[in-house]
Image 1 (tube, helix red, strand yellow):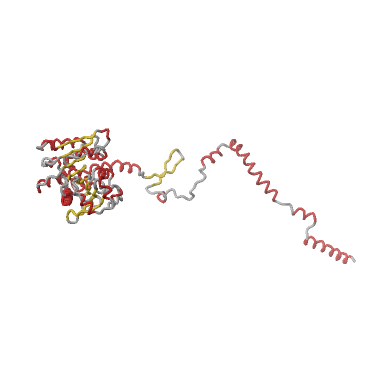
Image 2 (spheres, helix red, strand yellow):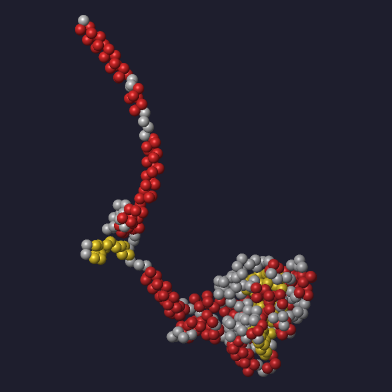
Length: 427
């Protein structure tokens, strides 16, 4: 009986144990469902607030904490940098250490600075150029022709020489072969009185117009630019004629030279003379072109016995050597030792003379010299010297005239043709 009881008890106990293993009792089940989420939310909300409130007091209690936030030296980025090999990051740099006080050593990167080298270069380069230019000119005189002729400055750029009517009315473009392999560009303008008649006419009509007893002006422009430059276009608007870009200028072929310029003018003179009948032909030179004009007039007179109708010299010089000695661009070299030998004498070695002061001693045609008092390129004293030389040489003094234009007009070197009184002066 006891054994069965124990067996029965044992069975009951087994049932209890099975229930404990199969499912939790009501009390235990409630304790297992306590959630951690509210605790986490409280922590997330209270921790920043606690930190915010406590930081000022901690800093006050421990001021050294503040240095961490100010210096941030614990943020040693870039991490894993090899300070002993700065050349991996920066050229021309070495690493070194310096003891600044007992127990303290600081690391330093020392770099070779480019600034002193740059300053030396900026100071020495202009000085070297300044000193070397006169010697280079003496050794290579042809370099000087580039500065004198300036034909590489073909302004206005992109000008359409074949359509001069875009700039000047009653004008056509033509080309003339002045010597084998050299062709020069020319603009032929007829007087405004024939403007209506000239519309739509071809080159043949313009050539026939040369024989209308109206004076034919052969215009010879100065250095730099082309016949399309604004002040040269203005000249054609008030004084019709034949404006030529000499050898090497504008759309003309060949390389500029003094002899080549003279050949160009004589070829154009012959071309115009063959078509102009009894019309007078005169040479009008401006700046560099004044020397070209007197060279051509002298050659016509000495070699052919032909006297050109007249020569007009606008903003002239006595000769190219004197021009070089007075032009503003040479001002920085006038006190340079050997200026005359290295630069001025080199003009002759480069084949440049343009001796207008010698040419006018030979001429006998009417000569008109025009110069503005405010000419900043070629001073008016050169024009006056040329006038005095010509007047002394001419037998008929009345053929030589000198007209100056006051500073208040502001005509300078290039704009005498803008003076409305110019046509009356030329007549």
